[in-house]
Image (cartoon, rainbow, N blue to C red):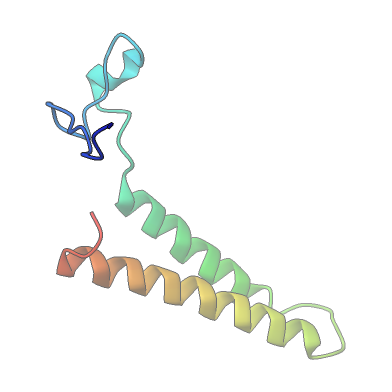
Length: 88
């Protein structure tokens, strides 16, 4: 009968082979979470900046506010989770 054990990788899970990805030697294979947080804040600001416009109805305002709140929630959850050690 086949074993149901999971084979563990001997090296670190976050290391990338430089033969497969040459830019890994310069550290460009990791995700920079600080950059994504800044991008998320820029998107949040852009969504709120679009509230000032030439639209007549307020349906667009509610959509923009809702999407901005979702972006802010995802950013806050990610920041809080990383500080607590829940997300790596």
